[in-house]
Image 1 (cartoon, rainbow, N blue to C red):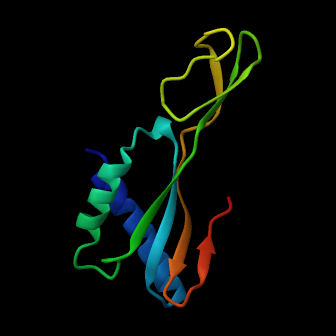
Image 2 (image 1 turned 120 degrees about the vertical axis):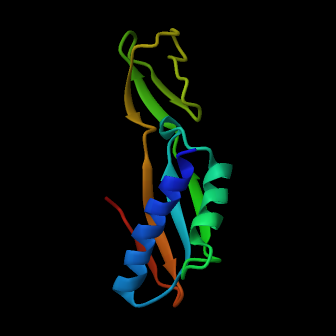
Length: 121
């Protein structure tokens, strides 16, 4: 279950943000695409375990689901899906050029003093 190592990595990022701003993280939003193969329920479970006994304990982890967006290399149709198994909606081809869906990114941290820190990269 790779969600535990991912939760640990997210915790490291958020601990650094909290230290940088001299505050405590209350909540964070993570963008997750289906191609990352992350199971949201397992990531929440891992988050609870990884943050237990740390300054992040009790902080909320919000998951923003990012769809797979792809362009068919056969017919040019643009397809969008929330599952990792994608084929062209128009012609059924599997030859797709992906534009999104691999995301795994901390996009926002809500700090104790209500300051929101966003990563818009």
